[in-house]
Image (cartoon, rainbow, N blue to C red; front, side, top):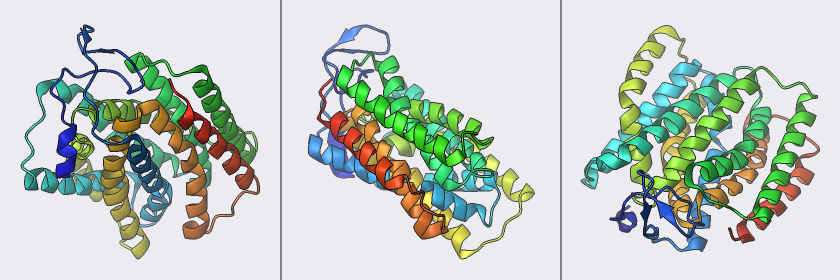
Amino acid sequence: MRDNDTAIASAAIAVTAPEESGTRDLTGDATTPPAPSGVPVGRGALLAALGVAAFSLTFPATAWALEGMGPWTVVMLRSVLAAAIAISCLAAFRVRVPERRHWAGIAVVAGGVVLGFPLLTTLALQTSTTSHAAVVVGLLPLTTAACSALRTGARPSRTFWVASLIGAAVVIGFAVQQSGGAPSSGDLFLFAALLVCAAGYTEGGRLARHLPGWQVIGWALVAALPVTVAGAAVALSTEPLHLTAHAVGGLLWLAIGSQFLGLVVWYRGMAAIGVSKASQLQLAQPLLTLVWSVLLLGEQLPPAAPAAALAVLVCIAVTQRTRG
């Protein structure tokens, strides 16, 4: 974590993806380009990929946790436990409280990544299978890239967008084929989750060019703590609780892997290779989740999965080689 301290920039915070040639601060005034993240591009791609691998286990872990807990209990407890880890790390390394200019972005990360996405997807999994939910959330890369372009003014190339749209079309076609052309009621929760998560990823990736990635998610967890502690207390008093091995294991992974460590490497990777390009690595996430669903939950792997996997991997390769 000490190595990440080199990522702290002294320049005004910039609302830009790394692909941009110019930046603007929060007031809209032109500034100099932001300081580099300090992470080589190759290593940044690897870190982002590790984040995707961690996230691919989120839905199966949530399904396990829901075997013994209610949805609100799962969401609030995972955030409280992750916050405890974050506070321990922040205290151990004597990290200073972020400057006031960073807190608006941290609040967006807290609302989108700590609270919004976990809650909406957990509620969706009450009526949707993990495989169906995973494919719908496969639209997250395109949503994140669009959010990043709107937020930062980044202009990825036409080839980048074509490859992204093809990858999204593959994901949508896969989802429609699996649902029989009639999306489930949980899809509304999933589509809302896409929007709030894309906003959280965009702000987190931007902040990670000025603060180490683990501090970005750490402070977001701390910022959400008043809500999550109160929510956990209410949920534990109103929802049934049956502590099984699956329920405990799923909750621990959600707190440690999905909510903290996964986001640490994910934001660090985004800071190095850019929000838009990092988001395209998530095209592989639904397919990885399908594999975990078969291995951990016993769900049947759809016959179209291999072809969809190949098409998505081709799209990832194109977007990663494209220059904005």
